[in-house]
Length: 380
Ligand code: SF4
Image (cartoon, rainbow, N blue to C red; front, side, top):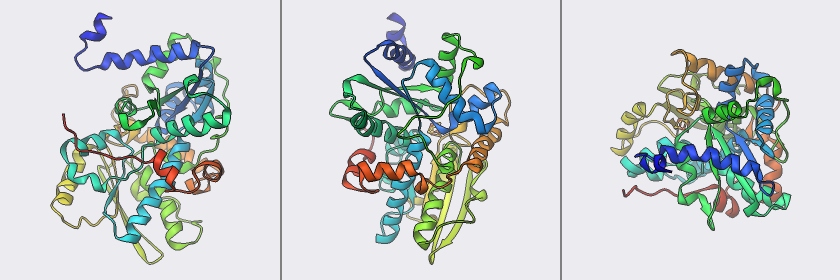
């Protein structure tokens, strides 16, 4: 009503999304699918005192209790992103394409490029973010497999990030008028839904995420913290470059932690892959200026996350009670990765089956149609 129209920044429109989610949940004809970002589990684990090993099952149970019909883990789409993004990276290396390749999974960073540094657009990976890859896969693969009409399907992501609300609403992320993701809830909003429904942690029955995307790799979970995307990509790039399974050195410790700039050079198959990880947009500016000036910055692959420490510090999480909470949140994800039976995205059997039965192969025409995007300078 009045207050929504009075809001100068549109934030109240976003609040309205939670009402839309409840409306969809209460509609018996609508199948409501929810998927949750990796970083959310670290905060929920801290909020309810859950051990890292049990955090994923607890969240799946929470989502069912709130009323979602199907619950997926979007670490699955992080695995999908790694297959697409690493394939794109190796292709650029092989054909002498534009390098360094910048990650594109953080909408805060993509916005900065489109608005202030459009000269960098060719450096951005063409991959959609995991949120959008998950949404489009649910809308086109899951819907087809489950025999659900798109009008009866409502897809919700639960994320640490306010910018992901804007990202989901971009016109590029709708196909024939059907959005990849219908609504985006922050971690805080999801916790509030639990409170509005008067649900206590004891009411939650932990469970598995649903098929056909039940299995995720530890690498996909690492996406939630700074360095995770680069580490997951290296686990695949090294295997592809050496043509041998990566058995040791799965952990790239030098890329973890909350420093504003981290670097690593990894030699594989006669190629040196030079990686940088930047977290906090202020830390990106010096690098951006050097790339625009045409300098050889000495990197081939650069991960950039707008939030200091990555998505574990996203503005959609509850405000930390102490300044040094970020390393603890990151450690939860590292612990989950260590405990994971699958630690490489390219070994996730559910991902391999999805390619077999739907996308064909990374960078296939269908993968390009559904999993990749384009960027344009912002004209406000
Ligand atoms: Fe969102 Fe921050 Fe993560 Fe970027 S780093 S995707 S702005 S939570």
